[in-house]
Image 1 (cartoon, rainbow, N blue to C red):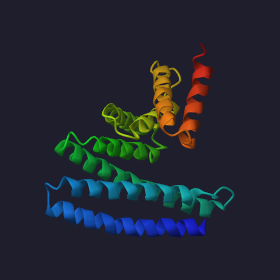
Image 2: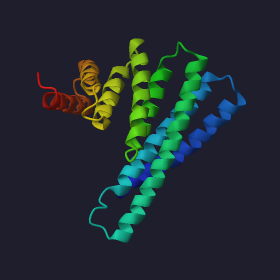
Image 3: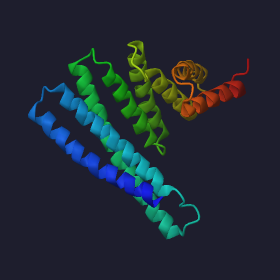
Image 4: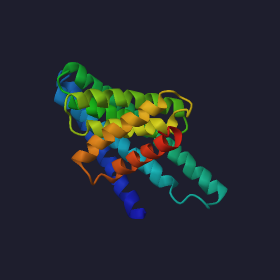
Length: 214
């Protein structure tokens, strides 16, 4: 665990430096779309690292004394807030890239990824998480329609996550689950070894069988 924490700390430091460099380049050349995209990529990666740091912080906290558990939970909450801010900024950069070059569909994929990860920071705010995932699905579907690799998987994973947050009585739930399965099937055709996609698809099939038996 200590080694993992050290690696995350090193990544945090390096990405902070990379962010500063790409920000300087983007500010110096406001019309440089590549610099803006690089800045967004650094923010996205940094947000992922902060999210991983938050998850690592709470591992093993069960059974700890109350004062220690409280301190860890406060630290994790601060890291999640940092991740949320970084991912929000990343999404804005990718939106800027897409608006500057609408033909660059890869920006849609990255924009969707930033929204999907942002939802992961909102576990205590399910309605906000659901809205972030809805935005992610929109971006992923637009990217998938343009043939961007990875977009169907993104859409499927985001839809599967949405189904976990939706009210069981929501009439849109069945369609959401079926759409998730369809996208995940496509993703697994491309990469049958994708364990995460397999698990998400299996969960969707299970929910469909339980809630909407044929």
